[in-house]
Picture 1 (tube, one colour):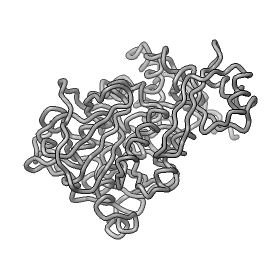
Picture 2 (cartoon, one colour; picture 1 turned 90 degrees about the vertical axis):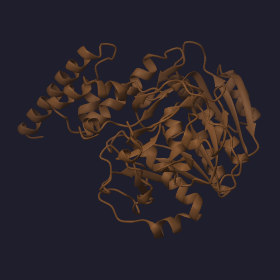
Picture 3 (cartoon, one colour; picture 1 turned 45 degrees about the horizontal axis):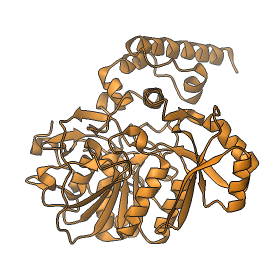
Picture 4 (spheres, helix red, strand yellow; picture 1 turned 180 degrees about the horizontal axis):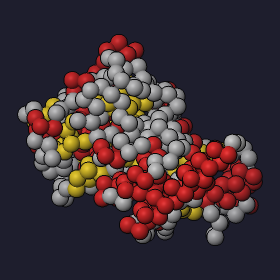
Length: 442
């Protein structure tokens, strides 16, 4: 490396440390990052990083809540890849820090359920070997719809999940085992809302659509919709994210019109009002329930790492001809590819603004299929009213609605229109965007 290159790297590292230290003074609960990760992964954002990280907008992204409508503020989105990646790291750290009794970090700082590993379709011999290695069965369940059996194993006391996984794989190399990763809504908060009841079931005769998300709140735009909800982390709890996603599919009030208003919507709430509840095992249970409802398509506006149990469930759904649409996330293209959007057969969706330009904060997947409106648009707030929303979470349900309507990805490709930037095979449902001013969105 040249002397210039060495001086550049040293200066970049110093800039990042100084910026992060400034942010730490404003966010004292958050630990400083190591130089090795941030500097080694991407260009440094310079002095802007400290300014952004210390802002109230950044704090909203770092500490999102389920009872708010998701969306990355535009100033944060345009701050650059370094800032987006750092905010992602801080968000995951904060989630784990605030829930140490339930979560711990593994490789890449990813949150997983503490003290638990997940075995997929283990045989009795493998379970006996696991017991000899110090692992005991916490519970097991079989899903006939998915043809999948999951056994939850307790990690030996005082052993981390990372060390437990290494020990179990050494002791039982033939067993398919993974962490119980936690999945997040694909975005951060925009506006809080007052407590609201759940949307009630109505009569529907259109295409059957499933969504895995938080619960859907009552709203005038959903009063005539056919919505059935079921909770997998306790009773369903209304969330801003789930309400916004549902409204973009089946909402209908004045100028606000969802993209598949006559659809029958089946909502699987994997959070029950708690961000820590959206684990891989809970997600698999939700997918099994939705499979029994015989939907044409399932929308997943959630993101997480690759997980073997979730991959098996997605594969089972695809083998039955059920379409899966997933958002690519909003942590920027420097973040790791997100799942389930990256699984084969899943339609991965990014967002575009009103000019048809790909959102700068859009994440990446192993493949990118389509884009849809994901900014400069409105979605329902729990209770009443509308909010401006931004993010790939809100592009995915529009593609879901179109897939349920036309029936195949090939037909979607035929109606896709060109866009600017990374939009996959093109933009779908461009006319589905509801301009915020037309509904008085906040």
